[in-house]
Image: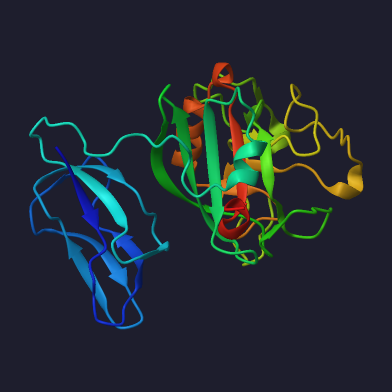
Length: 283
């Protein structure tokens, strides 16, 4: 049976908490009352113990994400064999009617990138797959976006990531194809050097990329410079490997999560990315 791990009440006036560190990874064995994660609130920093013994089957909340008391943080499979209490939701959580209307009816894979707020450069990503009856969520991946946050009117150099729904049709990178079903352009053109906004090295950032089809021609290499809306509207918006700092407009994930994403995306399922700050996506 899947046992839910929730954020407990940590004081009379405490309404939310921030996950600062997971002490166990998905797939690891945990014992009842063993420390599972660390949480910080405006009143106290504490460890949350596992409510049951079993395997940590799913982490629902990424590190550095803030959630309300009672929110589901993870699931532990206690091995009893009973089905999970929850079913795949009919609609993707966190998306309002406007955002849902932007998603093509043919899309059966949706990467949802949710920013903390309009001006924040930290976010999280979840890959959803439609099962035929509802949207099944994958693990929560920490992510970064543009230095100045998000915008629904993107221009070159504004240092904001574009809000919207975009198809995912093409991939590439400096490293060999990790096993994706997307067209993959292995090229030395993805080599990058220099430093980012926080002085971090950029080398390796484009080892793996998935082109986000904002102001580009689908079916071409991510390196293609054609800009249908004009060069002043920006371009080269990718999902790529995180370099431990904010981006110029892209979304970045850890190298392992980029490999996982590339292997999961299936052109037959018409994958798209839904991206923006949480408030905008709820519209």
